[in-house]
Image 1: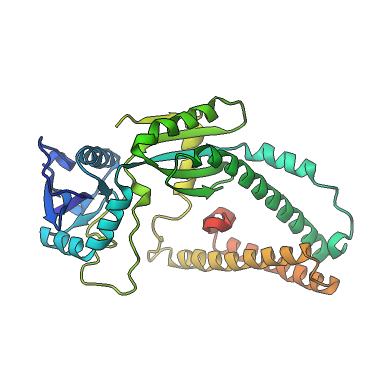
Image 2: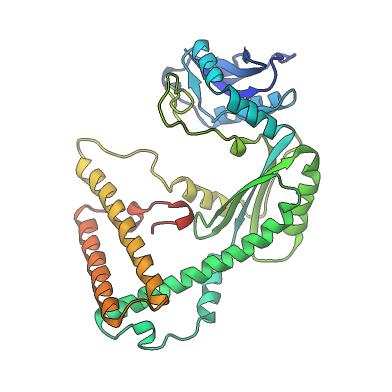
Length: 259
Length: 111
């Protein structure tokens, strides 16, 4: 049997109503230094987890958020015993406190944006001046022709990146007023212009949603996927340790199978 | 929580997000039957990464005109031959371009 961990929270309060976790096992709490870790027992062979389990994990974390500030754990985090959970909490107590203070009354929103990469590239190509033979010292030899071809692709790529940056800045500007922290990733695929997560004060979330609604109403060639509020999964900061320590269970959960 | 999940292009996003999740292999496929191919894939991916970085640096120098004509010629020939050699090795191990892809964070995709 393993202990499945959902979150660490800034309270030793137990949940008033019964809360059920994976496999309908009751969620229990391990208290430590004014905080507690929410867990349930998991008795599956190999600890294999699936998409439905991810939804249960999320539902439990959200319930916990109604009574405390939570640091959601990565889906699939297992410990061998309550003693290991306690050791982990003692080792990370300062980091947990820092994170709980930073994330108190905050929620996360996610925004993904698609752009029509092919048509943007066509526009970029059309905007390029015609290449001159021998320009940039590129000769007509096989090697020179190869370099000319690669240089053309390099220039197009540069201009695409500039255009991506311009559009991302325009999108991000709309949300910056309501944002405490953010993480932006550019062009993870040619069409995925932006993958962003924003940390927002819980009492400013309506303004944040409105900023999205205003942007989404405008005509344009961008497509959006917007969701939230979520528990602040992407904003928990844990320091990397230089030396392995006795209980490295956060990074090496036992018998975990991720989705 | 009063959550919203909203999109005007669900299928397009599903397609892109599958691509994102496939950027890194979930595991290195190595077993007694394919250990050569598994290792070749790993090594060729690293060589391709280095080749791409060299090419990017060369293009920057072409752009800044900090290479002489002779240097451009020599670099071009080297990069061209490296690409040809990579093509041959990919063929030997039955690998395609997309097999050697890696997402390199701010550097973008390798391929």
